[in-house]
Length: 264
Image (cartoon, rainbow, N blue to C red; front, side, top):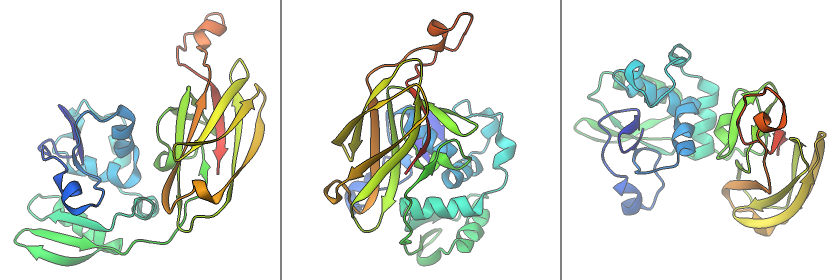
């Protein structure tokens, strides 16, 4: 699924570089990536579709120190609805299936149920194809069980109906037809008011102030900032504080800027 040096998730023997990406001009979601940021590897491990496949491929996940081994029981079955959302969100059109491993029969049956059909076959290798969906993904209920799929860098663990954010956080949305939007979110600053700079696809669109009380924000986004496919929103704050340095006898040393409840 993904490997970075000695750290792997999926097959421990996946040492091939993603050369097919440069050969065919299509993004790939598996292979040896080399020195990838931790939050990107975590995305694979938490994702309902890729997370299940990675644990299924690993011959001894209970011995893999690269993953959380305390919740392996939860990954014994796949979440079908969320997996299909992953496939639609990431536009996973082609899957190359090696029929030799023992788990290939399980994967083959599962992928057929998701709508994949065999298009090419060469000895033990098959190319499975599923037409991309035109579904859009325009909101994230932060703190919900399926928010991982749409969150990038900078998020702490989910807590009830929100997550704490550090100085930098990102969320992803998928748009089919670019058009003007309102970016909306509900947030609450930690300890001090937070100046937050908003970027859409690496272009700055606004600056806001998040107070220490919960507040809703609505920011008009011109169509020129939006593209077809996955769009990334970055939220960059100007400061953070550690609870351990703010409250007596508190041992929480996380760098916190604000909590985010929803973003759409």
